[in-house]
Length: 451
Image (cartoon, rainbow, N blue to C red; front, side, top):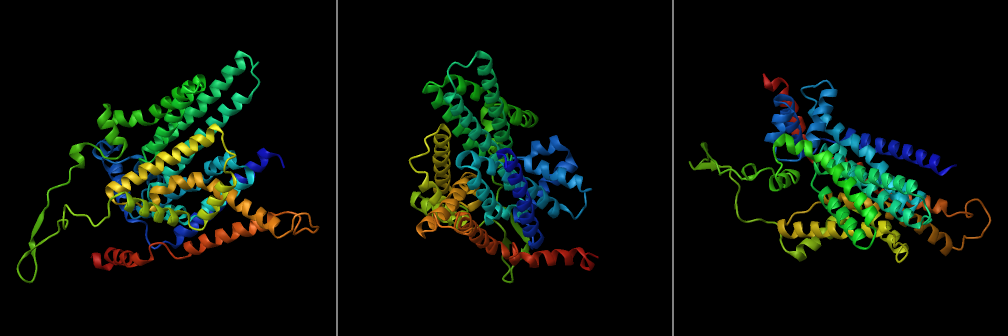
């Protein structure tokens, strides 16, 4: 089968698997995540107040709320359909996100590891639950993975151009630069849209700019200049319309908007309000203010941050993380391409940013580490393939006759199936089952009790 045809069939199969996983998890979820209610409220304001007015009054990243409003309107604006609309709005981008994840793994590790990594990405519990949760992470993951794929493609094309014969004419050089600019433009648009969804994409943008600056300093001025120009144009096309709409064109207000902080006035916490009309048995007034306003139960500091980072990283990858580590160990000392240096730079900057925030705020969840899964699935696929080959050789099956021992493919398939089964067992329990009482109470309140 030609490589192009194999790639198309692999993408189609991965989309089908991802679609089935999302349908299975969402259909068995008791309720969506609590944050889905917040996104639904913001999307409803867009429908009631209009897009421009709602964007100006909302300090957070707007793209998922806009997308949720569009999905709700496509569904015919059912009054009680916001939960389903939020799940659809989160699940559809998540189904498509497996395509760039596969393409990234294909460029970095090859066809078979990319296919295995794509399958593992579909069933990775922290990823698979995002659609049923009805939150913005699924949409962000699509734009983030698309941007990362474009950046990987850019650096691979730079390497291929450097390995091309030096007697290429000016026409072919202009065509090559035009293709580099197009890929960089795609990366800029995707990372800009990702930033309008969640702020993690800012680190990816910074990593790409730093890598371009280093490449220019080392003598690759033409690819670096072309890439920087295309990338900057793409980011501007994505974020400038939003910044113009909300009137945040100067650096500080624009940065606050892109990071989801809004203006300083919006971000200020309200003064505590004491509810005086409700009284306890003893006669004292009840206050619903935050207890211990200046004291947090979260642990701060570098050591606590490292411990929390390791715990959440293990929760994110699970057993797939062992395969990813084995895949990275197999390619140690062999990957010295520009794209490998870029990936290592991004991993360093992203992990450093996460550790800093964890040490400062004392909070971190596995969802904040999802960008690492986009890059790590190719390594996990390479690890699964490598484990199968190692077992095949260790057991002395190499060189023997017989359909079952002629190739390590059946051992590799068994390893992948075992990993996917472990993830499926984790997904077997209905999502948020402990909150089913809230849904039953809401249905009761909307029924005869409402009259």
